[in-house]
Image (cartoon, rainbow, N blue to C red):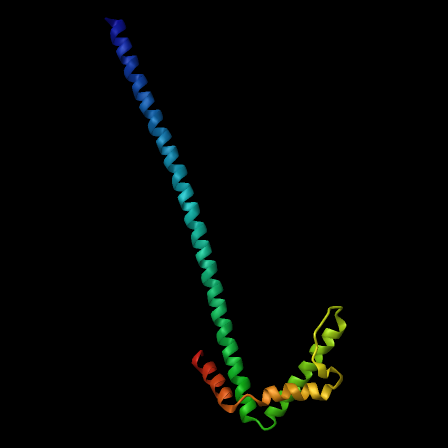
Amino acid sequence: MNQVVEKERQKRANILESEGLKISEINISEAHKQTEILKSEAEMNKRINLAKGQAQAILMKAKADAESIKLVADAIKNNEGGKDAVSLQIAEGYVNAFGKLAKETNTVILPASLDNLPKMIASGMNIYNSISPETLNNTKNVAKGSS
């Protein structure tokens, strides 16, 4: 009788130990699962925050650019000699751009009037002068609308 009772006790002990191991394995597995979920959520939040930061930087730069354009447009429109200053700046930029092209060892397609620098500058100025006052006002309005 003692052997039967002992075997029954041993059987229950084995069952309890087995159930304990099973619960332990489940808990360990759940912990690993939760760890992976938290890691992925942290990575997702990191990416979202980076994207928001980049979007905010782009927006701030766009607003600064709009304000800069507005200030330049106002300076050109409201100051005596403003258009002359712009003309000089365009001419300098044109000459500098061709100077850089001449330094590089690339094949470049240039206008036929390359031998006539004043004509090239006049061409650039014609483009500038062809911008109507209405277009300048629209640019000013766009700059105002984004600030």
